[in-house]
Each structure stands twice: as C-alpha cells, then as structure tokens.
Length: 350
Ligand SMILES: [Fe+2]
Ligand SMILES: [Fe+2]
Image (cartoon, rainbow, N blue to C red; front, side):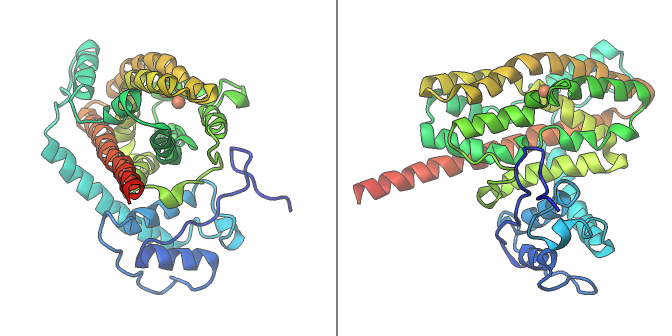
C-alpha cells in the first residue's frame, strides 16, 4: 500500500509529544501500546498546560488525516465509542468555559428579527469590538524580527494547513440558500478548481519559501495551548448540528477580521524582506477577505437568519468565540515571542 498523503502532498502527520497524563494515555492508546477501552481516562493536567487542549485536538484530528504512527493510521479509532465519549466530555467542558467567557465579555448583541441591512450593520459593529485580536498583526507590522515572524507563522500554521475545513462540516446541515453561499466562499478558499490555489497550498508554499516545515501538523509540538484551544473551538462548532449558527457566526467574524490585519502583516513582511510566496499569501487575504466579509455577513448569515428565525443569539455567540479566541491567542503568542526574545538577550549578556 502506498504511504497515505495529506492534502499538502506530505506523508501523514505523526503523533505529537504528550503534555500530561491525559494526552499521554491517549497517545499510547492510539499507538496500540495500552488501551483506554473499559478504563476511565486519567484526569488532565490543569488547563493551560496543553494536556486537555492537545487531547481534544488529537481526537478531532482522527476525523481529519489521522496519524501515521497510530494503529491503522487511526482509521479504526475514529468512531470508537469510548473515544467519542471522551471527546464529548472534553467538548462539554470546552463549550461551557467559552459560554462563560462570552457572557463575561459583554460584547454587542445582534438584534433578533431585524431587517437584513440592520442585522449586517450590527454584525460589523460586533466585529469592531476591541478584543485585542489585531495586536499580532500590529506587532508584525512594526517591530517583529525575522525569528519572531517565523515563530508566529509556526503558531498560525496549526490553522492554515486546514484552512476552512472545520466550517465545511456544516455544509450538509445548512438550508439550501445558505449552502450555496458557503460554497461560493469556500470555492475561493479551495482554489476555484485549481489545486495549486488552495489557500492551504498557498500557505505551504509560503512556509517552504521561509525555510519552515510545511508539512501538515508539523508544528503541533510547539503550538501554544491557546492555539490548540482556538483550533478545537472551530472543530467543536463545525461538528455539531446544534451549533451550526455559531459556526456560521464564527466564519463570518473570521472573514470580517481578516483583511485589515492581513494588510498589516504584508507591511511587516515587506519591512523584513520576507520571501514573496509568504507575502503573497497575506496579500491574497487582503483582497479575498474584503470580498468574503460581505458575502459571509450579508449572504451567508443573512440567508440563514431568514431561513432560521431566532438564530441571531447563537450566530453572535459564534462570532464572539472567534473574536475572543483570536484575542486570547494573540496575547499568548505575543507573550511567547517576546519572552523568547528576552531570553535570547539574557543569554547574549551572559
Ligand atoms: Fe483563506
Ligand atoms: Fe476568506
């Protein structure tokens, strides 16, 4: 049998390093060294250690490409009742803490039953709530050095290697009009019939040009817990029919908050003389997402609300998750790259 390939034409990812008792037990199980069947999984290390975050990321990844060094590549693990039960437990905890976080953030609400133009206006206003999500783009624009840029790209790659995939889980659950609008946006993300133009492929070319590993999930071992959590949230919203409106709100907020930061990133990369294929990735998003944001808010969200009246609060929840998770990731990434910078400076002095 030939080696299985991911979408990037790379061999399948291998299992990452464990970060605590739960991820260690899960990885050992996936490898066939021990089993979690008929056993209570160990309690995870506290949130923020990455243990729980990585365990859920691993369980979601079984629905994507699996792992080369898992038994049978992980194929048989995908629908195991005990692993689905574990996933369900971790998802309930994830959703509960983000419901609480969104409630505490007190972001602007979406009006229920508003005219389409008013709903769109309210959605754009919600996305303007200053959550700090743009801070990484500003940092790249003005002050990052080359290594800091590289580290930001490694962190970002966790999402970009499967760009849009999580939102596509919603497709079969959508009303027809909304389905058509999602496919319009997705066509751009997936290259409009040209495999080389897939955004995940543009990203991979950019990474290679920067001398960084472009393989699927290559940077998971270094991924910050907040980055894994952000990814898990997208899978959570995409995989549950109950959360479809939240997934659409998330997608729309993602598009609305992409074009302006992408412009800042382009400026930062030009300042640093970054390789053209990586600059091109962000330049493409400056342009494409300025179009996508209109499609996503007016057509995608607009049509869904028309077909599913009363869905506005859940759409707002998904949008808030997008904004707050991006802000949390931004804070964690900036702390991380600045700390590494200080450590390096300290070593220089020593
Ligand atoms: Fe994209
Ligand atoms: Fe987009």
